[in-house]
Image (cartoon, rainbow, N blue to C red; front, side):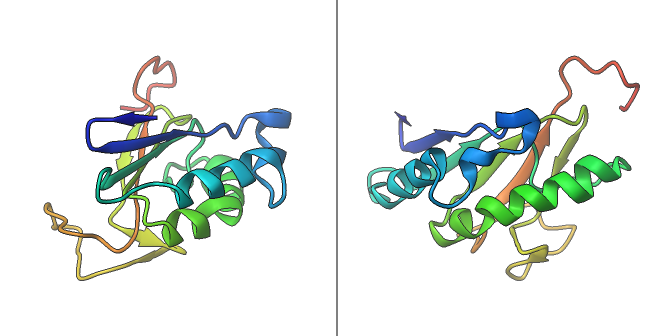
Length: 140
């Protein structure tokens, strides 16, 4: 959907208990995503925002979520998000807050450092984990 100058895309990675089989190439959600991203008028909607429950990047010490699962989701859609110049990806699942620099294939893209606070025309998406609501694990 469109809101103001933003095109916003909701994805689900929950099919088959997080296996996200509908995000595999040729599957309905994957094909829908390609079609949707390819039809965005970037002059009218310069911001493209994707949100989904499970993170593509995270750093908590949960190896299943932040190594195995995040890597799996990146293998499904990270190329598409990069190719279509998605600006930011909002996720949750982990009950903490994190934000990456502009990143693709686990590599920071651009002249950015951990001290950078301003991004002008980043060349890769910024990934966030915003899972602070409902925190019962004691992760602050």
